Image (cartoon, rainbow, N blue to C red; front, side, top):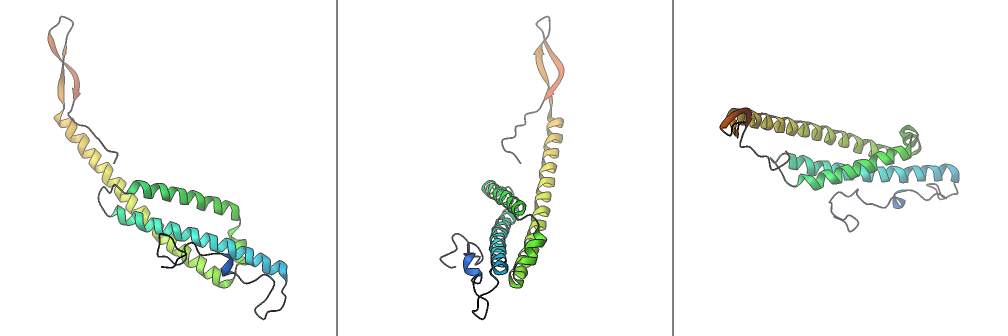
Length: 184
């Protein structure tokens, strides 16, 4: 783990985008280049590196969430979900800011394009895995609630109350001794 990465072992997180691009005033031979084209590609590469870094953070969060979803009723999901929602909001904002992804892909260097596509494939796979695990968790929670509801219905007792003449009467209302203390 390098000094540039903070809380992750992923070498692509938090790397400086400027160090990843060639100088705007020189080509590979060291001669002055068409600065408009080179600056455009350098700017596109910076945007691509920023997107790669963000996608790497999303992949890391999805990995952590998927690991927690394998554990029944993990209490650590709350902070991860909040972090994931924040990163997805940032990702959507970045996509809106970039606008036309095809244009970005046309402007960036071939190496950066290959790196971005590889991250996109990995991100898609993690996202699909996360969707399957979340769907399974929701179905499991619904089944638990259904069973609890059925048991509560079977255990329901008539509620005792007073009638108009002060006598004890049983009403049609029923209740069951059930309480839910957590959100599933």
